[in-house]
Amino acid sequence: MKNTLLLLISFMLFSIVAYPQTKTGTTIGQFLLIEPSSRISAMGNAGASLHDELFSIYYNPGAIGHIKGYQMAFTHSMWFADIVYDYAGVGINADELGNLYASVTSLNSGEIDVRTVSQPLGTGERYTVNDIAIGIGYGKQISERFSVGLQINYIQETIWHTSLSTFGLNIGTLYQLSDEGLNIGASISNFGFPAKYSGQDLRIRYDQNQNVNGDNSNLPGELFTEEYPLPVFFRVGLSMPFQLGPTSKVTVVLDAFHPSDNTESMSMGAEWMFKNLFALRAGYQNLFQQDSEVGLTLGAGLAYDVGGYDFLFDYAWADYGRLQNTQRLTLGVSF
Image (cartoon, rainbow, N blue to C red; front, side):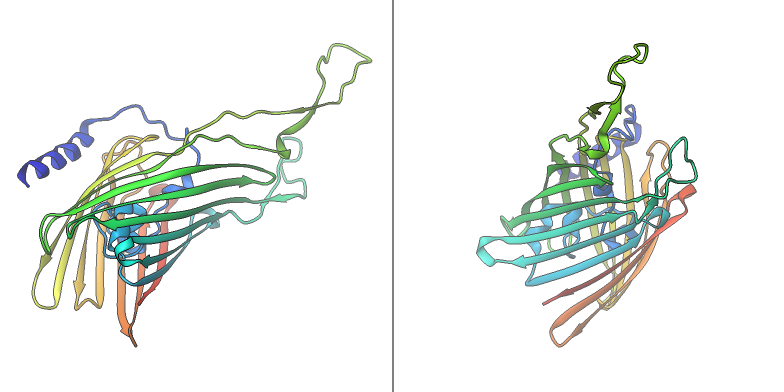
């Protein structure tokens, strides 16, 4: 146990001083990095070692092995510039066969005016940007303390009449050192194939030689785009619950991140739960990340049972610096 803790803490501390060149803006599928869980978002998005809610699976597919019964949840957020973000998930416990999970992620820009150099006020046309990811996952508890899981995602990005599509894989493991004790988790997300845009918006008309008169100056052509990779994201985290009394519990979480398109960082947070009914949460995101715009996170949650159905309502607020803030709302039910 001591060796394991020393290894994890060493990795987290190393992330503070390991500042490679940032590659921000060099990957596709950035909407995949928007965290869907209002609960974990309010705890600084440090969810690699958590497994006690359905959307923990986003942070670590190893949490699929901990699904109990049937669970459904939905998150809605008004992202920057009135962009709409939605995420829905369903989990099924299949007993000895393992557990199943399915999710849908959607990001929609709404209608945007088409502007050109010659018509900066708009051409009268309007376009939209739509991103979607559909995932199917499987997980299993190998033992009472150890679980593994994976999720395969089909990913598509569409800008007006141009789009790209690819597949990504998420893999994770969770280990609990003792009952109501320390949890350790590690996961890698968006490991997949590069992709490039194609579509009718890339078709053009051009003059092969503008210095020659009398030739065909309206030749059909097409622009070809480069391939770009998905934003591969490695997480490792710790969480520890502390029972403060018969009705009160505090859970502390700490994660370290190694993204393929940015510098390493750490996030931390905590949750105070009263009677398994009401919760207050706070955290801080992406400490030590170069040029980070994120920071403080806050939130609250309510859970209650009605006729054998467990309902939850979670809210999260997150500071994004010059981009102001984002808010998330998650609704869920399990039975």
